[in-house]
Length: 379
Image 1 (tube, rainbow, N blue to C red):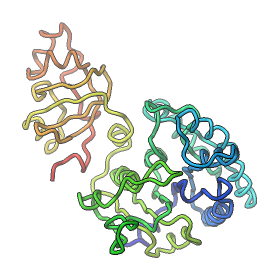
Image 2 (image 1 turned 120 degrees about the vertical axis):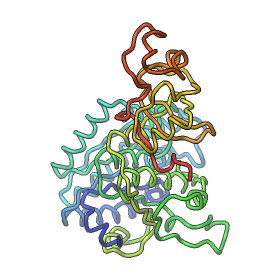
Image 3 (image 1 turned 180 degrees about the vertical axis):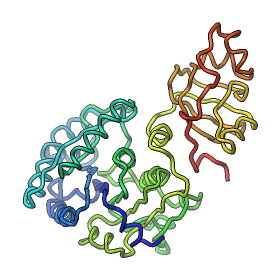
């Protein structure tokens, strides 16, 4: 499948714009923002549906307060975000307003997407905004987020929203040309990788964790975001956001940045949500028989296949299933809590009621609530 073929079917597009792209001497680089907005407005005129995940609030707030260098504490970052977010939205609103386009601010934390009901509510809101032709401008709610409810970086947030709106394409605009085979800042021999067909160890090791002074996510987080969306059947392009005409060139099918092709086997929306949005609360160690049943036969996880339990999780919590070597096999929602599973692991389902005094389910994790992803299978 060529770039032009992929892009021909991409009408709903999520565009993630990183801090290193947006930031300038005045906190925000207004010229770059107007340049990108101009290109996005042209895409809107052609019938594309655009949703934006943006960084820049903290950088804007720091500039407003005259702060140089890195902020030292979480409260400082949250305060800077609170100050800068209003200006960031005003800049977007004014820029799109020149083209008669409206924007809508949406601030999210991880807990907004890990709760299934709130996840569906957010999806409905975004769907309505898209239907109305309004451009959703999404950012992490940095002014209230703490480690437990943070996405970590906007690359992860962008991947989650790409799944939420069932976009046809994720474009991740960054300060580099794309993914290189090695860190370009440390090697003159570094070569740009224009196409990634599958995620190998070489591809993942090529991405570094180095971040910019104003950004949270390095190339590694961008590659992981690409991995998440391609598992849902969505292609991803990492491209240079400060390059003039970058979006125009991408949709013209030019070899810009790095294109990640979607996997051949796609997860459903619900299973993608389980696999990549929910944070695991514990681990179930399973034997070879259970591993085969999950990976090759598409079956549920029964108590007889569980040989160990780690963590203190409750009924309905997400848990990771690992094999005897510690390699992740799947993730799913537990039908029993950790204390109960420790009592019934290794036994047949017919003995659950005898041991616990009740039996709500035959399975530890039902196959409908169990997600198996490509990266979880040992090569």
